[in-house]
Image (cartoon, rainbow, N blue to C red; front, side):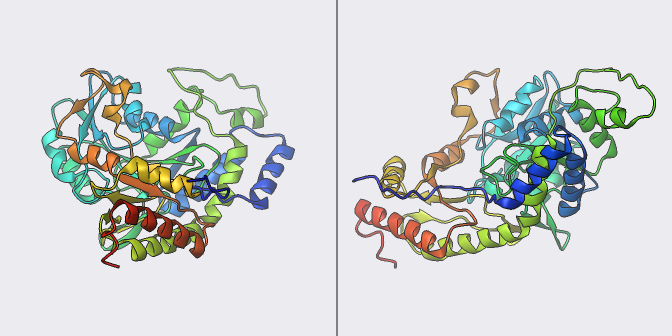
Length: 397
């Protein structure tokens, strides 16, 4: 099959002259590193999610590292998480010289199975790191309940979940409002809002927030914003090991414009996901993602499961040949070379569901600029491919 000239991407950031003007403003101001725009972005993001504190950093991996360090994760400790996630989830644990302990995902969905968490706890467990995979909130209520019984901190890998919501004590609340101890977000271009790259930590704990701000800037005792505005000479000190995890004002200016769009972006993505589900859910051989009654996803990605008689790679290649980009389902960290050996991780449960999900799921295009016709094109192309794989697949339609 000849490759199509038009390509429908899996994801596409929404950027226009508003972001251009925001960057221009910062460039002309003369202050382009971490400064007043970062402070404003932090305040606006905290207000959006309903968190007392928000601290911006250079990416979500760094956010996860600081979060784990802040709750005391160190050498020899264990952190319960999932293998079914981007590798950064476990890498951040290993940055602390701790061991990722993997549990399997739920039967229906791509998030941590809370039924498996409690049995994975040992005397060395220092934290639970749950993931809101592909923007779909995990069963945070149950994870937090388990953690409280054992006095274990909960960190949310909310990299994909800006704008997602969870029903909490009868009220819809945004992911990032403190439900666990710390939530970590990504602003990578694949996410619903982007700053090119970047991250954010939210928390209700003022001491956590103080540590994030100290560590992200080499543990400098006096921030440069304070030093530059001082009327007397100030010498800063460096009392402990810190990191260069700063966000720039250029990134933050873009983030502020992106945040203004977030509500509308999520609404459109939910409309597109609904169209996908309406068309694909009746199709034999496909499993469409479900949204629990207590969750509202931002639909950062739309991932469909394939029955065993539908080959994942062949399906993706056929889509690509027709101009439709796709991605393999979420990776499994324990299958990567960097995680070979008992010193790199421990599997507390069978990871069969995680492996099957990676091997039998495909992420379809979903971005706010997609038209309804684009969704129809992606669906019709996928259905034609499935029909070739099995002529009986479309009988339900």
